[in-house]
Image (cartoon, rainbow, N blue to C red):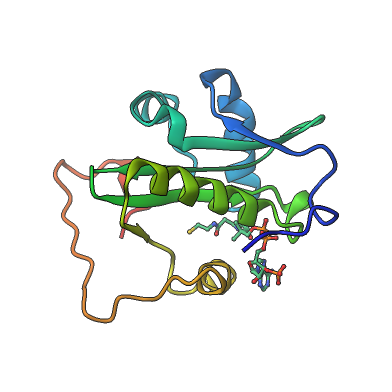
Length: 155
Ligand SMILES: CC(C)(COP(=O)(O)OP(=O)(O)OC[C@H]1O[C@@H](n2cnc3c(N)ncnc32)[C@H](O)[C@@H]1OP(=O)(O)O)[C@@H](O)C(=O)NCCC(=O)NCCS
């Protein structure tokens, strides 16, 4: 899907994340109601997947963020969020397009993502882009450490 250029915030660019963006990125997540990963978590993931960790930026600052991971065959897209002041302008669509392109360029054949069962807006975005729920799979998870405060947000 290509968001119409006129709808996108003026001058918006998509570029790789840098650690100097952390505070701005955390604000986008927090203000859009998403979880905020710690500095250390983001440092780890952005080093490992430098070219797959993207921000959408306008003159005033960062307005969108999202990243992908890649295991050599399948890609996954994580933490896509757009600041509420800039939603419904095609920002998530543009980030999703770019993440998919970068995964495809690496040779990924499939892309997976998780979203909340009640997150109807995100579901609309993904369905519009051809994502389908996997009826034949169940997501299992297991806590590997003693439960800490920051772990409570996981299921
Ligand atoms: C989900 C989210 C990233 C969408 O960002 P966005 O930049 O507003 O989305 P876009 O403008 O690119 O919309 C693309 C498509 O998604 C769907 N969509 C987005 N917002 C929608 C809304 N409020 N209601 C219905 N559909 C919506 C539409 O199909 C839209 O296409 P259209 O504008 O041509 O109808 C944003 O709402 C957000 O940050 N939510 C909070 C964080 C979150 O839940 N992230 C998902 C993690 S899995």
